[in-house]
Length: 324
Image 1 (cartoon, helix red, strand yellow):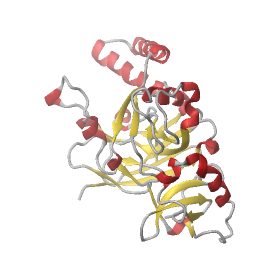
Image 2 (cartoon, one colour):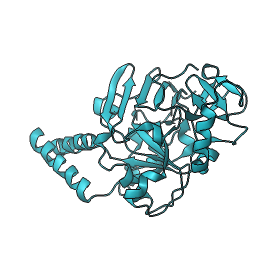
Image 3 (cartoon, helix red, strand yellow):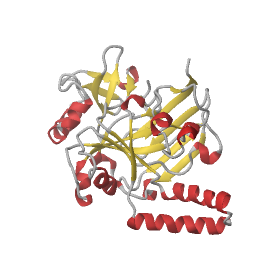
Image 4 (cartoon, one colour):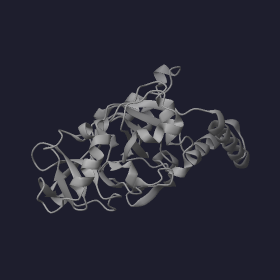
């Protein structure tokens, strides 16, 4: 597997790799990977003691002469999903333009509003939601995760398979009822997730009163390409000013700044921690911007290629195929 382009920010990143044998945690510096299995059994174990390991990893990253530990060429390794998470917390409807587009379209088609009236009403609703609303969060399954270069396998049921590229953060210490002003101290690292969804399995016609079926629509095997790496938060810069870009068969479909989030990362962490105790290794997805397949009227089919990147976090490339 060649080194992804662009490379992640900072002097090093963490990942999980396979060289033909068992998977191992690795320290990525440029085009080389230092096998960390002599120090910890997994990336998750490193994150669980993040404050201790971060300075040690910085020291190891400087020892690239090969005298300390086993080093590999990145091109010789298979890049796996970077971490086995605890919880996967997923934020929905969290990009202003995306939600305004959805609400405005409904007001036009269902309520007969003019395009100008519909958009003005939708923008007013989002402004009020930012002032007084709360995030919308649900749980995902770790079994849906796959690597950043693995095939995406379309399930037999459903036809409207869609993409949703998202910035994800990894929690680095335990916390409950975390104040928003302290929330960023709980972030160990960031990574890329593509939260795929089968749109025509999202609503259950047999159970209309219950609403959405997130389990069925979002948790098929391979429906959460993750990685390539965990990039320590200190190397990423301002997480509210990163570019999210997704190409579908070479066509740019999503291209937005994280500035467009309705609820920023501190508010998301504060909100979810009122319900659940966060633990090191938990993964929090922060929502997807405008430009998914439903917006374009285009859905995934066998033979498609998805390419995705977020500023400073690397690159994903997934071929799409049908289930065998």
